Length: 473
Image 1: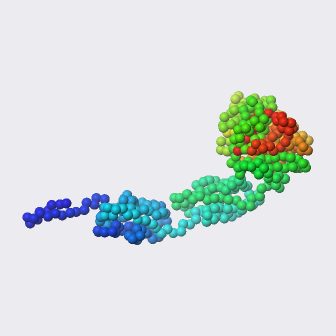
Image 2: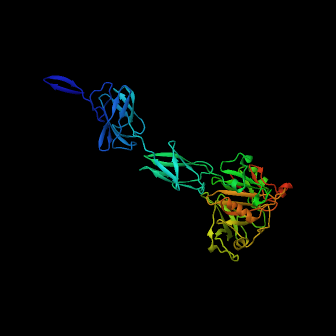
Image 3: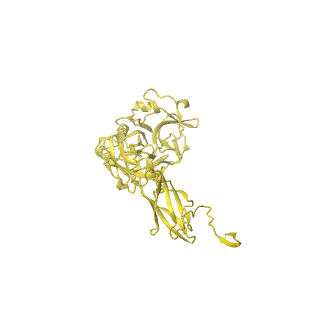
């Protein structure tokens, strides 16, 4: 208020102190907004304000496609104060309704809903393929490819046709294992992450064609990525029983036991933490056992041995290994020649997350090894002939981290298999490397604490104790 002296008289005059500019417009009564505008590129959009419905509506922006950060300016009529957004000129996301709160005549609050007409957003993914096979991109954010012979179900590599501005967030290599479930793809577009479900249809399990029957339900419940198969024609011989447990890349491996206190498989599985238990070995050869990246047991071998392992990235493999001066090394494969004592300089430092050695490497780099090749690399070769039929056990791994645990039977009319025929069976299943474990009367594999094969020692009620078991879950 200001005092004015004019013509000897004293007058009172009032003025509005509007330092924040909120009351620049004329007196509005119940109409709080003089105008609401937004930048549209180099142009300006004016919103339609409906004071009855309490809405602020922008039409379709002509020069702006990204509405996640639009600069909006409010001009208020006198007596009304903008509370939300905090500033008369604010950046807002018009892809979603924005609440605008006004203090009407400095007394009561009213909330207006501010929106904009948004053009139909194009799909972030315009097309997808696996090799030359087109995949269907659905409105439900699904990508579905029809599996065809020759496709690697555990390593499906997609190529995408993306709309301009869209980027792949994960997985960056666009590679999916679709045998045991759907994959998840995340694409970022216009500032938002869009999740797609990746699927494969019409996949044909190759195991039945190889003479193996799916008996997974007999060992339920199991995760989708663990399956169990049985054959009564192992090695092509009638009434010859064997089981295979197949584990997907999602499975984790553990070595149960420390190599110093041999136990039966029944004793190893008492903790119930794992779904599949396969006997390891029991011999005068000291095991290499690595669990959770720690060396539980290092070998005192006089020769190189084959070992199965899982690294810190979850990749499975097999390697020729040897301990030298309290350090573990892996060594390259020798195709032929006399065995030579390895030197540390010839190997590579070996530090997997989980590992155990077996009796022999029987399949390496997709080749079934001959007895001479076994001797060239390991200096010894046991029960490897084409007439050495036993109840062998082995674990094989594929190129894309699927694991097959094989266990044969040698009682009740079942003859057993030879190592070369077992190695060939694992190769036919897709394994590129495999390690043999116990043989003769001791191989055993339990799944969900249920027996698979029957062998001599277990049949007699005296299952063999072994230095460790290989377990999966």
